[in-house]
Length: 389
Image (cartoon, rainbow, N blue to C red; front, side, top):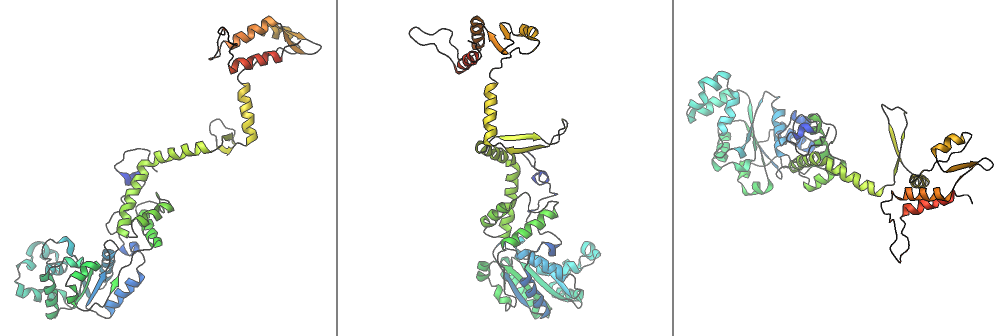
């Protein structure tokens, strides 16, 4: 449930999530969170079926190259005949040690933590050790952000093929960086995947899966209009879309109360008065049904409000003497059943009631007419109305 606080740190918990659904991290199981990409998956499948050696996945930053490459790594891990090695070249400030990345997953626990043969072997013996560990397996080298590779890296990859290593290489890059690099020297591109931006429906599907994975439901806390606006603002880029969704979710959380108050204030000035009725008749628990009052009801309410300005009780009926005591100055004529009082009492009544008026003037100024407030005028009219001539 949305909190009404105007300051919150754990915004994800305040919105009912178990964590941040809009994180840039790749979520698993990866096949669940990879939206569509049916054509790209088919091309990658054919690449390995036909045993091609080199392919490129090109696309703008944030369009989904990394998650597609990680999906491929996950799929290949199910087959014993392929040793898949994922490398993100962007995280290395210096030369990427491709050989170490290839050998470490093949080592035993003892070799990784104690004997560490991969660190002691001379370079001339390293290739033989790698082939021994691979046995019958081929290597799928998956290089993300490959434009960060330096020239020595490229030369090493070329030399691995010359050494007889069964090697298939798939790289990712942006269109501009790929054109500027020497990556094309690795071979003919047998993959040729250019990732498009996601459609709105695909983007919506992506965000629903993420929200539900963190304990949410549907597109909450967004509306359909919110998502479409964010989608256009992100220029249809999935990575940018997630960033904007996080910002918007936090804004909705912090400003929810203020937005509701603004909505109610605006509606209050435009709407007619509302009628409320208790449809259950219980004092402990009432279900209030709200509807707009019609013009006739509004007029009646105004009339009732005007009548409430003054109430005069007249002693009528059989117990006239008893009621007369509660209203001194009145007398009852049985034949016509009308209330009567003398002029002296009338004047006293008007003066008494007039004294409560906040706008009264006790005496008029010389040369001016007597000033009467609206309340005084009404009182006089009421008093005169009941006078019996």
